[in-house]
Image (cartoon, rainbow, N blue to C red; front, side, top):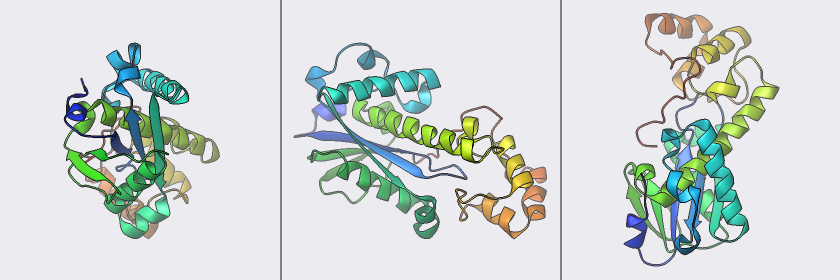
Length: 234
């Protein structure tokens, strides 16, 4: 379980930064930055908050709402940033993720002295940066940011699912699943698909190219209904 051990070794105001949505075929990449007043954090949230990937959807939503409640009373500051599909295709997913992180920190409303960033690549921020591999499982601030980023992005994708039915986005939130590939086969590519990602590019060049590879297992997705894992650098 994450704790505040890393934060205690830092001087000044510390924020945790994480992103969600590097791997999906569709939708934006989201990032969140979270500053926590450790002296004011109490109750169930402190006991149950974890890396977003380790939580059920229900627990993620509960932690997200608890963090918003803490923000309303000033115990937590939250900033959210995004990079669009167009930006992902133009500058690549890694640079877009770092851009979303910069936007999240800028949206905090409070300048941190140091940012603890999940992963091993540091975004260009107006403060000191420390990268922490698997930081969402180690740092409470990063874990909080992972929950905010994940829940925010999932809600965006479920809203897009209402506008673009047939791709299974209400459950797969844009990741590579059988339902998603079936939607691409039947309905084609939407404006929210990442054209720089190989399965989408192949679908645009000719459905036969994509589905020949799928039948061979080269681009096999995750099981329908399962939450696909983030990329290792997430």
